[in-house]
Amino acid sequence: MALVLRTVTEAEQGAKAVSISSSGLKVLVIDDSNTIRRSAEIFLKQGDGYQTCAIIKRNAKFAGVPIVMLSSKDGVFDKARGRMVGSQDYLTKPFTKDQLLQTVQEFLSAKQGLA
Image (cartoon, rainbow, N blue to C red; front, side, top):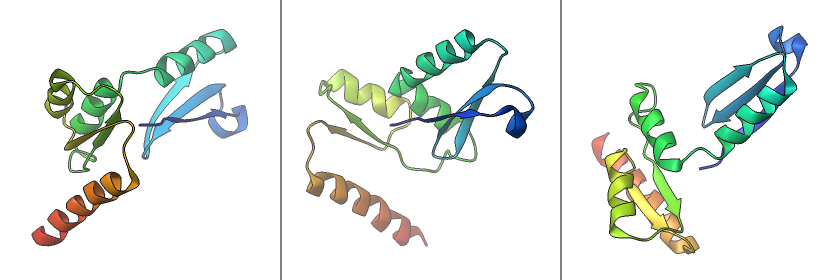
């Protein structure tokens, strides 16, 4: 899961800030210290995928959005932990184009079956 980062100008927010978003979910860090803003940006970029998944799933707006974790960790514990925090599927790296497309197709088929 990638976080998209950009610096928000004073004109945009009325204060110096770093805006961090992932699929529309935004984290805004406001501080007059560039060091603090950069530290927060680095910490959030390095945020653990399990924690990010859990945060997204706790938000009622995104609770129904399927999450597929992509990880180089392939242990049973890692996959179980992914499920515990709310991911619907877990693909290990390297994964193939077909594996990813099949996973997405399964979610689409399930969604269409409910409609």
